[in-house]
Length: 170
Image 1: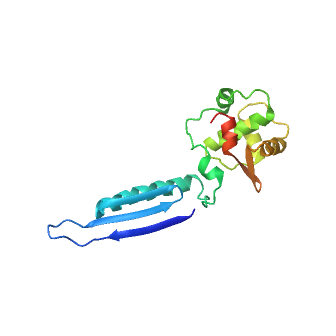
Image 2: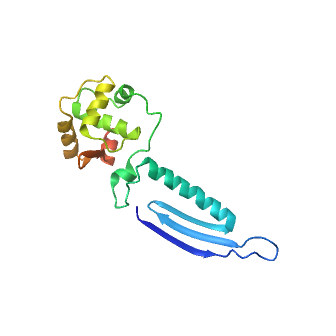
Image 3: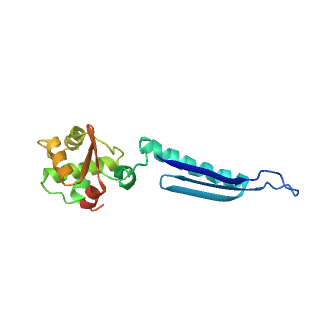
C-alpha cells in the first residue's frame, strides 16, 4: 500500500496559560486521507484511532494490498459475519442449476466470510461441505468465470472481481 505522510506543523510548546499548542497533521494511506488540526493531545488521539482502524483493516485483508490498483483489495464487499448459510445465499441470488454461477456465488460467499482469495478446490469443498449439488469440475467453472471477467487468477488462487459481484447483484 503506497503511503504519503506529511507532518505540516507541530507546536508542542507550553503556552503561558498552561495549554498545549496546536498541532496539524496530514497523511494519505491508500484511500484513507486524514487531516487533523487542534490541541496536540486531541490530534494524537484521533491519529491513534485512524491508525488502529488501518491496522485492523490490513489484518483482515492479510496485509497484502499494495495500492497498485488491485480491484479485489478495494472493491470487494466487506467481510459480513451475518452472511448466513451457503444454501440461503445461493437461494437469495437465484442461482438455479448453473454450475458456473453456483461456483461464482460460492466464491463470493467465501469472500464475504473472509476468504477473499480461495483456490478452485476450496470452492468445491465449500459446496460439498454445505450439502449443495457437487461441481463436476471446479477448475473449469473458474476458467469460465475468468473468461467472463467475473474472476481473476493469482497463481493457484483467484478472487471475484467487482464485475463478478455486480453480476450477483452485490
